[in-house]
Length: 306
Image (cartoon, rainbow, N blue to C red; front, side, top):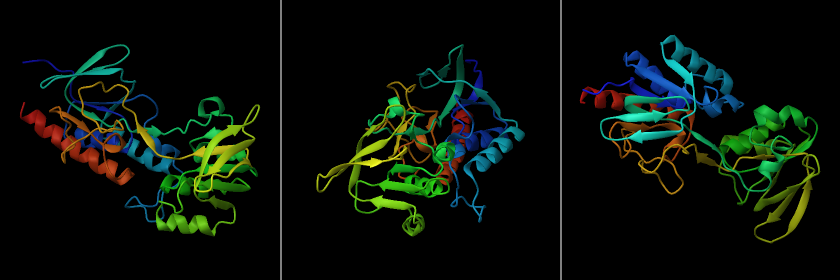
């Protein structure tokens, strides 16, 4: 019988990974949760969450993450700060390769999440110098200034509304003629005298010597181009999977998100995916939590049948 370091290793400490860890710890599994950055995932930089059950008044993303982390720790979950370099996967044994060692485990849950997608308009040059993906982090730097926000989904509209607490004006660019965000968020954006929505408009670049001074935009229907004078640019146009360590064994969709069945199992027995890393029609805290619970239950049943 092969010896294993753990029954279960979880990669990623966002809502999916933390939930998986809580369920595994309650089941008295020998479990390790790995997180390369700060536990909590993307919600720690989310201003306000209104659609997570149990918080009728809403809750800040940071506070919700803090509660999840505390619950996991009180349950006895071991959380280690470490980035995963690669995976060695076969039917019976899974290995997680870290910088300083290799961990063996009977089962694996990948909950590494996703990161903001870039537009290629100068993000690398101007990151921290006017371009941002996080209003909660950076809005105070733009007090009484004008900024451009890009996107039309829930995150873009919610964060644009948050920006109005600090900035003088928000130009919200959307490449289509209607927003995709929830209606309640749209209503709030339309009602704000600080938000001006530019329909059918995309950003083509930014300019500025030491920081952003303007954003170049183009109307996709008329072809008209102009430059908006602005001190900052916030980008919310979707996500890319944090999947650089996956390798070629696990089947993904064309964008790199992991394909699973209803039990969150991948094409490799004993390997599961949960949360934003998964090929899923909805990426929310509530769906991530559900994914994490299902994945752990499935992993537990898998281990029992080894």
